[in-house]
Amino acid sequence: MIRVRSLALALSAMLLMSTAAACGSGGDDAPKNVSAETAALGTLTPGVIKVAVQPYAPYTSVQGGRIVGLDGDILASVAKELDLKVEPEVTDFAGMLAGVQSRRVDLTVGGVAWSEERQKQGLFTDPPYYSPPAMAVRSGKTYKTVSDLEGLNLGTVEGYVWVKSIQAVPAAKLHAYPDANGVFDDLGAGRVDVGFLDPLLIIAARKQRPDLKIDTEYLTPPTAAQVKAKPAYQYFQPYQTGFYLPKKATRLERAISAQIDAMYASGEMEKLVRKYGGDPKQFLVPAADVAPARRGVDRPQDWTPPSIAQ
Image (cartoon, rainbow, N blue to C red; front, side):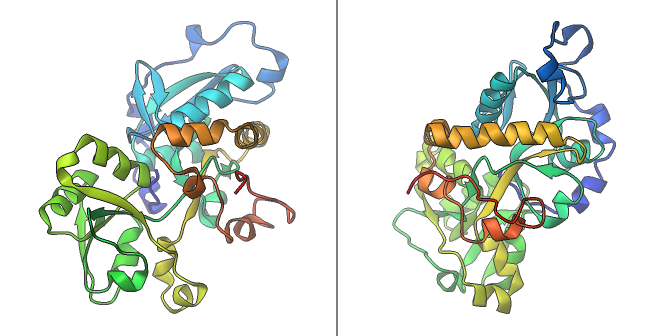
């Protein structure tokens, strides 16, 4: 979710996972007669995959002990194929990262953005989807490029990296809010011209709050020259998400990545993106810089990121 937040947040959350509300536990609830193939995946409890999540619908939320939402549905499909029982633990975004990096959980999901810094402390799967630079705008308004944003009132949530991008836009005024509701409220009231939020969040708000009269638009990514001149503009570009695992969970990462790739090939990933109102061409086609970013870093030089046919 597709939140892209500072790794520094994780440092303040190292103790959070130990007190987080757990929606299940191992022990007596662990699957019996786990196959050797499943046990070889190396999860903390054989046959169980412990997953840290924060409530962030429609990407992740926990209902009846199950993770639901786009990431939850993708994970459920993967876990079924690998014969793993999903066990969620509720925390916040920083706690998600901290839980993985300290190996208190097997995995975290929910639009975690790949970065070279994060991959030094954990493993990323192949991208289950890509996050386009989405904008919430008032109906009838059109903004396409960074230049169109100059001099406008631009809103986002505190801690999101879009804060940095907005601050770099000439004459634009930043409005930062504790949560997305503040962005939507001020957008509907006309106090904000554009809100930068995760795309499925905007799509869901439009359905749930038609009185806001908002639409979703996608920003044309800034050019390489623009990013070179203003590095903060890089956060206006699409980014790749991933399921995030502990550094030693190499076998589990490979198994999950294989299932993700298979879901692209079978059409299942496209079906799930459509289920939540997303445009598969925006979510399931990698930008040109996705492959170069990871080749020679945490992927081989010939790695090709998953994609639907265009």
